[in-house]
Amino acid sequence: MLKRSRRVRTTRTPVRAAGEEELSRAHVDPERATPAYEGSAIIQASDLQTPEEARESERAISRRDEPGMVRLLVALNVGVILCALAYVLFQGPSNLAIGGASGLSIVLSSAIPGLPNDVALWIVNAILVTVGLIFVERKAVVWSVVASVALSAYVSLFQWLIPVSASITGDLWLDLCCTVLLVALGNAIAYNAGASTGGMEIVVMALARHTSLPVGHAVTVANGGIVCAGVALYGPHVGLYCVLGLLVQTVVVNGVLNDLKQHKICTVICRQPARVEEFLIRELSRTATITRGYGAYSGREVSVIMTVLTRAEATRLEKFLREIDPDAFVTYVNTSQITGHGFRWV
Image 1: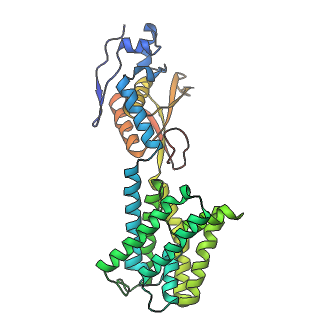
Image 2: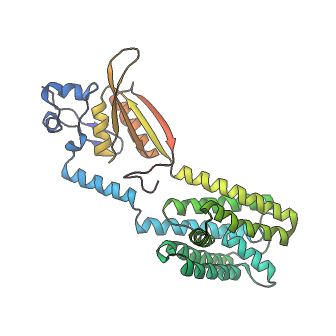
Image 3: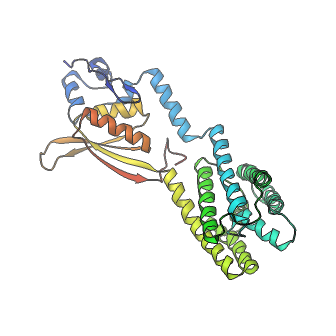
């Protein structure tokens, strides 16, 4: 008979190990109870969950699949504020028309003498919102419209609070780097939560909806025209910085977004696989795929556990494995593209 297992605890959440009676309900017969925790046996860990644990697990999965309104609004505001700061402090004073509504507003304010940058941005975003409401399905464009209005409002607020008429760094390259980093981080934060920072994204959606252009080509057409206007207005020196900024910004946005979305594919081989199954199901509200394998040297049968976790969850799993089996063999592979239940927004 299996003695009642002692409790195993992590530094964050207490782990309640199943006893013999619970193992029996999980389809592990008495003769196999000991191997279930010391060897290659597999248990149905969902049967070990209490009703409250099952409900909490479902809530955790739902939060991963559908981001809450609070998360959307916070991410949207953070993203837009970063873009607004980049526009007011670095992009506008240096005339860096590197695409987007902000780049178009810089071109417009230069083409019309006396037109302030923030007023030009309001005009551009008003036109883009009108285009979106006419040519794009309203449900699809709603967050872009909200972001466009918010960006214009934050730019006007910051220009009133921090009036800047010339480059604060005195270096065009520094202004370009600061602009690209802030805009890339702002866009990535908003996109990661399922929102956007608005602007030319509305034109991209309209082009993709009413023409045969792929989305990537639509982005190139929309931003390429703005950069070309920048080259014509500000000369080759500033114009080439605009071209470089557009290319670098695309790369940096993708890099930051991939980093924010990064998960780890964890493959575990250890002496107590059922403990790991139980920990994943009950403590992390995750599941795993279990396969049979054989050690090449020992010839013993082992259970190979494969699961996908966030970086924080992978750290908790690693700490747990150190407690139950310091000799556990674990591999980690980074990934930022996952689809499936519990990973809808990855």
